[in-house]
Length: 101
Image (cartoon, rainbow, N blue to C red; front, side):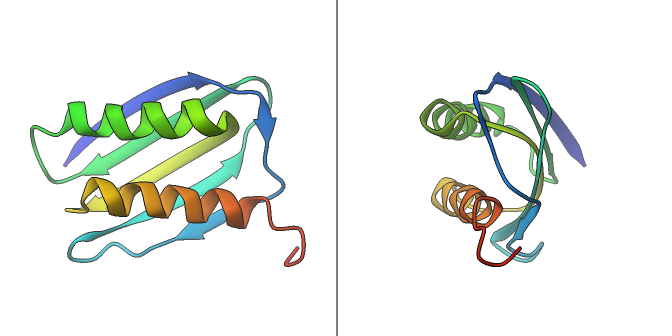
């Protein structure tokens, strides 16, 4: 199991915890919770070797576009970059959804 931890500056808080996806073939699970302050932390757990550059690219872009103040835990089971981006966006939307609080 490989673990990659990334940190980003942040400026926008989310309202609540969020959970999207499942740890299954070709998918991943994203757990997102609000963070205090102006820093975000992302912890990625994956069984695949050699994809650090892909993870950094996808997360750098997502965090630059959204700047959420969050702690994110990603549990990967071979997801493609498109699935990673989709699950992150779903979690962010769920974390900002005030209707279901």
